[in-house]
Length: 600
Ligand SMILES: Cc1ncc(COP(=O)(O)O)c(N)n1
Image 1 (cartoon, helix red, strand yellow):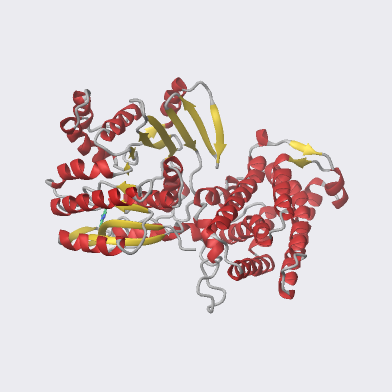
Image 2 (cartoon, helix red, strand yellow; image 1 turned 180 degrees about the horizontal axis):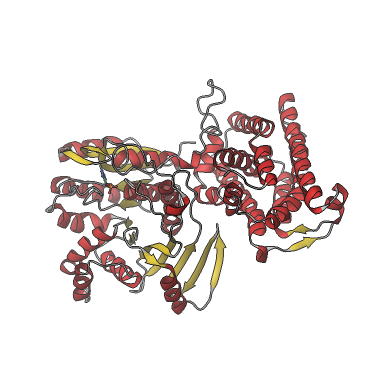
């Protein structure tokens, strides 16, 4: 079960925040295996770059040949290339390598190119003379190019020179305007840059703060109102060749104070993805999300392009990979390490495994890879997982802004859910392949659910005057509760114990994670029932039962290691369960989504 392999060809940042260091951390947290070819060493810290030592281009190729002749590579990310010699040597090698791997029946290894030119701190990371070679030799080989706005401006200066298409003056006009801060301009720029050869271009809008009402009205002019879907809290609309994916969710941050991260909800950032299509029009996907006002953004470009390459290596489409990469970066920025050195800090690449303690700590030092399966399931569902464990319901519990009414709605539905959930654990306990100890652990989870339900009962009794019998026999079940329980019961019927355990895991692992997180981040003076809820999930009874069950899942997976195909199926089951979990909280916080469907 070797993970997908991703190669970074980039420079080293001795400060650890950008370059190959950022790339390898990103690869690891997105469930891939990282390889690296170094182009240059930088003496760098949070305050800037003090020296650069370029590798001889022959040595860059030697590293590449060594890796590529032995290890099958699923995606490549290219970052800092330093000088003309390295660009030229690499372009020639990548062209031959891609041609030979394509001729072996492959559809081509995706190459993500981050055209690193100048560091955030102002140092030149690509010599002037290398840009033309990069454009002429390297861009045509790449699947996607990911310039930020200053880099896009640079590239546009060359677009007119190297392409035969008609819109030369337009490029010059765009390149000269230092204010490429309007969405239509960014879209035009992405399309022009694509003429230079890459199949797709992602113009990153981080340097342009856009105004939400303006964007909304621009999109409305475009929309026929065809709202396609809400996926992971995003609203997707499409008109013609423009798809817009809008999220309002501000990633939770344990480092930024609310005033800075939520300072102005009217400000958004938009990344523009342009893909070449068979007709001349191409297609656009706009990723619109809240601006996070943080200074800890060192390594953002490296991280985004690496996350994109890792997701492509996992087999995701370009649009989904872009969406995963953006989600990863948003959250890693929101959790940026502010106080690492004297200058702007780096992102926190390890945020998916926060709070440290649940899944990162080895419960048993004799296990080489504790929680290997659960880590891989989380790593491969970062966007879905984050939408669940940092749901507005959870954030509302932390700062007390959740309404009592939403909380009580959820308590009633969760009470109904828990009865089924306890049945499912009991069913898993009865599986014929269980050891004696496993029967006891799984039955213990059923018992833990019964304990958990007592809290629900008490809250419903004290605030709504409801008895257990009223809850069980007079409460209608909502669509989200029914959907989740039916999904898990169907999985149980398939008879595959590991799959059943994966279906119930997000609830257990997620609540254990959410409980620990809330314990650290809840505000003083929140509602006493919110506090009791947090105490229940952060408490040792629930945490211990969850940890035991997690170890059991890992033991089962280790005993009968899933094939790649089975792993894909388990991942789908996990993803669905995460979405269904979040769906129950969606109903709580958004009354218009509630549907009571099943009479008791
Ligand atoms: C080795 C290396 N590669 C890339 C960057 C750009 O990153 P940033 O724009 O965040 O400074 C960097 N500073 N160092």
